[in-house]
Image (cartoon, rainbow, N blue to C red; front, top):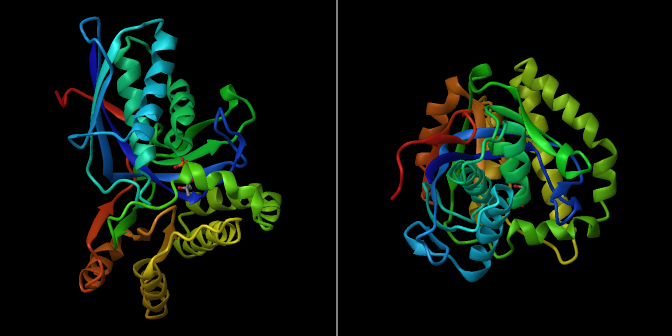
Length: 326
Ligand code: PMV
């Protein structure tokens, strides 16, 4: 059977960094994110007796052997759940640069999970899809439910999954994903994550993370943009403080990232409420209220080092579509 799904990337407001369990990808702490309307992966999966081997094409190219093995492992999980040994064809397109800090593994594994499960003839609940997506790539579990999402960290495979806490239309927030370079990051997140405990600050982070999560949920609930933005930005800086102080250190920023971090503060001092957040990579997200998105975009368009601006609203989670890629 053949099935196609579109999965959104998500931007973490409270970040996932570090795992309690490496194999099952159980995170050290819970996290909160927003699904993004214009950073998406579309994936078609087909299983058939007539295929003699698995074939995976991403953005019209064959994957590197390391990337391929991660996708095939995920397909194997789906085959095992379906009790099938049929080979698979997988074709994916990403509408944004991969491995540059824009969470392509989240949209990629969410779309692969939803399409793969359907193509295998399985019927999974949202919770089961989120659990399966998590095993493929942690943050992908948050790209399954819609809108504003919380990943409940849990401590077993069955208790670690994401839920929607507010629907996409709850709050008119805009995320401008700003591409300053399409260079692929030197250290993938999954590798960087393994260093979390080498930072002396990680233990401190864990001590008050639950309080921070509760605070973030309350600020979203109250639609309090200024306090929300302050918390989002300080959380991003805390994550990067941990990365910078890991052994070996992880430095994901480039001059373009830093320039935008500084400009964000300048624009704020001039009266434009805008805040940044950054994941693993040089590209940066700027968050503002819908009413300020056009003016912020105009400011960004004037900067010669900005390569692309992708405007996102809070979006639904990964969904099936009938627009197959083959
Ligand atoms: O799911 P991974 O292994 O790509 O890790 C994501 C890590 C961050 O993007 C930095 C934080 C997050 O919660 O998305």
